[in-house]
Length: 177
Length: 162
Image (cartoon, rainbow over all chains, first blue to last red; front, side, top):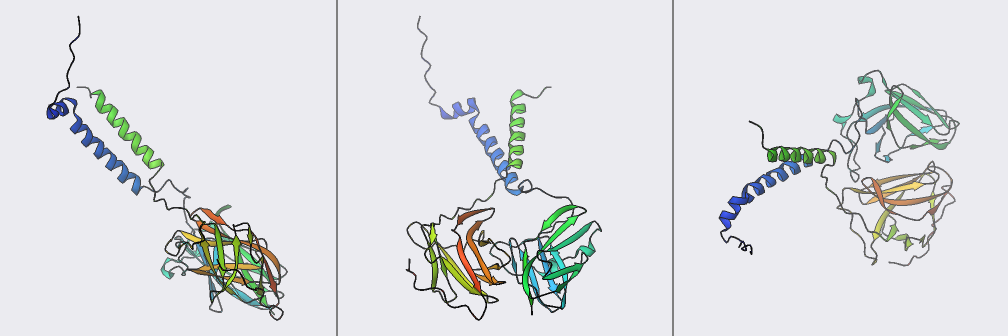
């Protein structure tokens, strides 16, 4: 005995109502919209977060009025000191970072010093060639002393205790005769 | 009254999607720069050198005077030799790597950059088009000679225009 063929219904409304497509589609749309909105606003997992202070840039204000500041991988400006002389340098930091093509100095209102933070935060400054110049100072300011004419590089590292939380790109400087 | 199975399934799917979305947030992805070559010009637009198929520099040496910054303009070219406009791209920047970083400092500005010599000597540099977290383009090494201020002279002869 042959089974009679079941012809598809031509009544679309009845078909949708029976299958529930309208409700499902609506739910799926709501779900997708909600998921997309949530995903777009959540950026936290992209970069690892470090608890506590965030340092993204360093600004050096020299006693002669010149300013040098880091910008991602490079510096704008460079300190100059005469051989046998010193220049005082105050160190400021920012938690924000400018866009790659924005080479202006960070706004002053964003600057802060480590002296205003907990005592566990400190800064280390290292000179590549210590026969040309030396650095001495604390976490707020330092003194660059020129020993003989030449050029070298200065590196700054901000640490929380013994953990490095920020490393500036090497800064070229010159000791003039 | 127990919850229907289909509602449980939907809830689980929803939670799964949310978790996945949190772990892999949707981000704006900007296209890479498909550069084939790079032009290097000075402050008045005169071509100093350029790469050839990004294998070598047409003029393979750059001479600077110690203590005198040189303004450099870099222009990438596509595979047809047409300049690529990147001024409007805020996610791109030119970076420089030097074998002897103590001799040179690269200070990029919008549309150009300053090469600042910090001593007499010879080194090699290469330029990168930096795109957020990676390099889209890296040039071959270019020899840079930094002479004492009094001894330096203009090193470049004519360079074939692109």
